[in-house]
Amino acid sequence: MSDFKVRPVTSFSAELTVPGDKSISHCAVILASLANGDCEIEGFLPSDDCRATVNAMRALGVSIEELNEKGDRLQVSGCRGKFTKPENPIDCGNSGTTMRLLSGLLASQPFESTLTGDEALSRRAMNRVATPLELMGASVRGKGDHCRPPLKIKGTKKPKAINYTLPVASAHVKNAVMLAALRADGKTQITEPSRSRDHAERILDYLLVKNIREENTVTVWGGQTPESRNIQIPGDISSAAFWIVAAAARPDARLLVSNIGLNPSRVGILNALARMGARINERIDESGCEPTGSVEVHGSRLKGIEISGDEIPALIDEVPILAVAAAMAEGKTIIRDAKELRGKESDRISAVAENLRRMGVLVEEFADGMEIRGGQTFKGAEINSLGDHRIAMAFAIAGLYAEGETVIRDTDCIEASYPGFLDELTQLMKADR
Ligand code: S3P
Image (cartoon, rainbow, N blue to C red; front, side):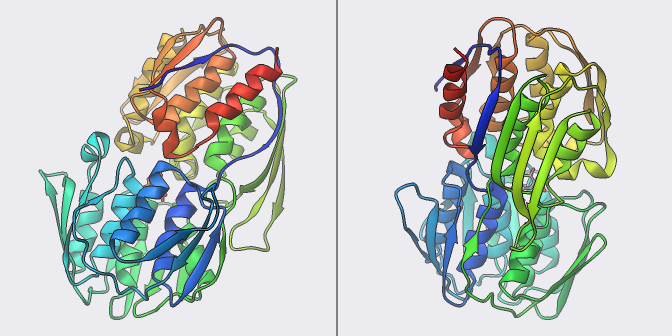
């Protein structure tokens, strides 16, 4: 396990790009595998989580070739959804996305398979995907009432088309059901209480697979094979978010991030920061499969706000770094309706509260969020990442503005979503000398 020392900086100025979007990378590899020929993927995120998906697809007989050393260009040879039974259990590592999307895919395959994960993934509940997939005729079995991994999946050759309403907005569950629905007879309708990210639907459109979105409902028709086309993936706004907050919350700071995804279902962080008083300009190009563009930030003194309700799904992965922004802002910030965070790579509500307190910030924890008293100076501290990439990176940013040194324990987890983050951070600390 590696540790990383962060020392405070006096200024922040950067122009950078970030690696490919994690969510889109998973979806692109899986949908390209279902296609009717070769697809080249550019801008793929070569991280541990996304590689888990690549290896899973290879274990199902799909040929995937890395076209460059960096690993961000792939050639996927689509097999029209005719996968081979894997010889061994498929290891999803730490990646909840891999396990949930694969469950949907395997629910429509005429064989039995097993999905395993690391210790943290083995603690995560999978009943939310198991329930709709069982309604479609598959058997998805895990441990205990919450259906924890390992998952044993017995697929059905012809899944039943269903109308399903998700109890909570979740792109993972929506995508798992859509993947199974592609081999069903007839149309499947999925309704969410509020809209989750829509990358899978956009890639399906792009690969000429008929689906319709009306308000919070997606309709997908079964019996369709995606058309093989090359896919371009923009930089991950969830990775850019760390630098965006580092610049937005610090008067006189400046940042330009180029080539990032600016899909409306993911830009909640930008909207929340704007309400906090951040000075952010966006340039968006809507011509591709995903809105993509650049974000320019000029730092200022932020103020606390309330973040809750329907805006949560569009910033769910950014809550840890938003909490750091809140600690730097004047006044109090209240985050509500984010109970989902307790079931992520770690319990992110308690991980954020505990680590902010270590830095001397006043935080009250609720079942579904927290209240943060901002505006005090924070002190360098020893941070426990709990093996959660977003916690490690959020607190590395907090360390830039703390008094004294901050040590982030167990930073290997950063490889899950942002290879190169610590190199970028090292450069920024050096530039400040
Ligand atoms: C993801 C969806 C979100 C998010 C996760 C990645 C995805 O999960 O928190 O990190 O790639 O679709 P839910 O939509 O299930 O909350």
